[in-house]
Length: 171
Image (cartoon, rainbow, N blue to C red):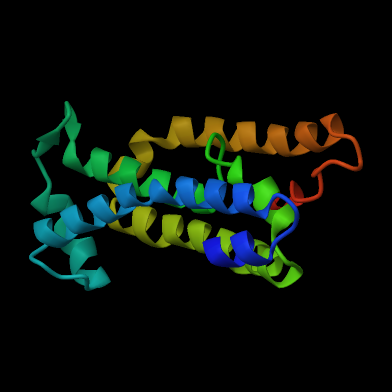
């Protein structure tokens, strides 16, 4: 996606591509969390086994003053929040939509954003359900900020500015 936006995009394609790439560097957090789950669950990526083993394998383990399950949940959430994009990880999307060629913009809106939501539902909620209840309040606040931001931000922009991609945030 970086090369497709950066090479064949609009006038600010290099900036949009670099911003897209720099935001995706944060996905290394998701990789760290998945590797922690891999080693804690007996070196397997079998989703069913990981769902069974993760709560027991990480029970009582503390990282950075929090339980390991909560730390892994936060790392996974940040990775998926960048894909969705959830506030405050949303700044790459408007520029990427405007500067990307039409076909790439369709891929961004139709596939990439939905994969973030699917990942949250499939991995965060099914594998680590106990941590979901711990983060429910923060998750609700982020959801309200996203909904309000999607309605306020396009109204604050002039029509010739990039207010078009904000409906993608709502999906």
